[in-house]
Amino acid sequence: MLTPIRNQSRPIGMFDSGFGGLTVARAVIDLLPDQDLVYFGDTGRYPYGPRPQEEVRAFSLQIARYLRRKYRIKLLVVACNTASAAALAALRRELDIPVVGVIDPGLRAATTVTRTGRVGVIGTVGTIGSGAYEQALTAMTGTGGANGVPTGPGDAPGTRLSTAACPGLVEFVERGETGGESVTLLVRRLLAPLIEARVDTLLLGCTHYPYLARVLSDVMGREVVLVSSADETAFEVRDLLVEDRNPGRVGRHTFVSSGDSGVFETIGRRLFGAELVGAVEHRWDTETWD
Ligand code: DGL
Image (cartoon, rainbow, N blue to C red; front, side, top):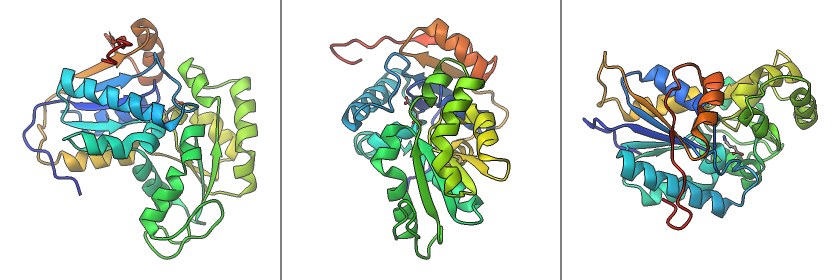
């Protein structure tokens, strides 16, 4: 159990491989407008999905150290499922501040919403291959839950997960392409097994996917509820900051990118909105990874 943070006028730190975590940033900013936030998009090294877990873990630790040192963050939000699956435990071991991931919050939201217990989870190859959602469901219910295996009584009685890796979707979002024929064709092919499994809830297990919500919903059908981890993650952050609020204050938001900051600002504004201004460029030093 994490201890609430008190009286620290330091920013919340948040990171993703690129633009996906902005969906979580939006929810956190809307819920906690008084808080300062530093968002790091590792666009110089995206995508994380196809990379080995150890590499994603190393990247995550580098970003966390950088945010801690340079911005003195008080809390870290891992706004990326791939990084949450690969690095949450390592980050919690190393950092002396609370670390919030997106897998448990998303799963909590999905198990609350489902009526039939048939939940589809889509994510990157790294996230789905890691089995992180099945493990999280097991931890939540105390029993199994992997593809098709019913769980026992618990917080999510009878929830069954059908998972599907969706290589290629993140790349569309990183280009700012959130609709159109090519993405629709790909989504149709990738989601076919979940339609077959007759899921009633689709958990967007990659923070980039809410930007594709219209296409995903069109393909799954209106009766399937789409769930993202963003709001539930923001609630978890709020709970940690209950004693660290400053009503009426307007928080400052800083956006840092390890790739071209001009591109980050242009595509980021399209996805996130006009408040994304003055993106800072942080190129990794390839010797010190600082
Ligand atoms: N937004 C990320 C996630 O939630 C990552 C994607 C990627 O870089 O492949 O998994």
